Image (tube, one colour):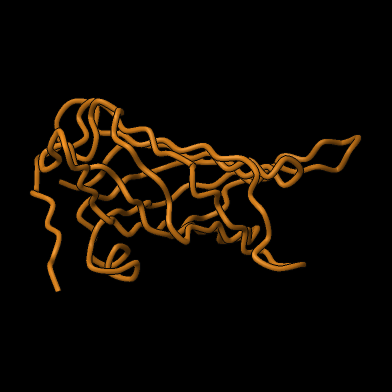
Length: 164
């Protein structure tokens, strides 16, 4: 089985990540596990070694958000075009596991409707042989803040890289 390797690159410039997705749907009725649509995209800063120009084809595989009010989390696999190894005839993709474990830092609730938005922060990690190794020994780690709107099911997060 072939192994994918992403070169270690020192942090320089704007190595950041952001993400916003809508239309999250429960994995099954009553579930707090919400599936993230496959066509959702990350946006990378100009200093990112993954896709600094933000013109890489990408999609998410088996991605979901766990909507726990205290300890929300996200995980899945990012399928992203590798501009370095692709050719004019063949698009080559890297499969990059990701995971984020967050701590809720606040809740905003609309007094009239009761709709709430969870505010969180924590580590978002990319890379490794699996989703588990993405959290324990990631190739890229970002310190992020984010929100989840319980009414509209909109998830956003963003932050700067915290490890080389």
